[in-house]
Length: 292
Image (cartoon, rainbow, N blue to C red; front, side):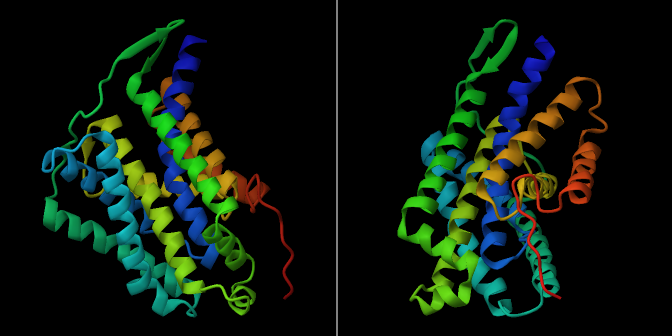
């Protein structure tokens, strides 16, 4: 039981990171039906922005976190305006291929600027250990979890209670009708990319602190897992992305904790296959009939 509880704690920390990345996937898909496969690399850029903020500017955890969120929000808007906006009315496969191209561009650009090697993320948080009934909980895990919950609550407030959030929900339902009601659809899409990218940037800083290392290819696998988390919970549904992120994180750590570390990645893909067969819309999604 102690091992089980320990892996649950570890899974919640890892799932927090997946959930933050998955929120970006699900927000963009909910608005313009685009699977932004460059989103994992924005998460990687967030880790590097946080790294530079700490090492070169001497900032602490929260200023570095805010700097990474602001930098990634700007990068997300630029990517949307340059790469995706001209393809707004193109086929989905065209936009998908473009997203993959943007992903490779961000990876290559980071390798060119920051080098290809692994960099050690500075220890900006104390890592005090608390033992509760034989379960080891670190102060870093607590801060990561609390930061994630706060960011998710802020996102829910923006979506449900603000003018921008109402515009996002309107555009996700019917962009043409929203335009007729005076909503600036292009600006709404840019806001969506900015918010999703900011959350990914926060996840990049948190994972840098959690694992103490970053590299230009670090966004590939977590990005795919976060996408699986979004699909699992119901892509396009914000609570689904949160639930999916935590679920994937807990599953992965439980499998690793019980001696299946070689298979933890494979199990995540098996979960994707099973959910697509049983409930393609995701656990919290609704099946929608389409006329042919």
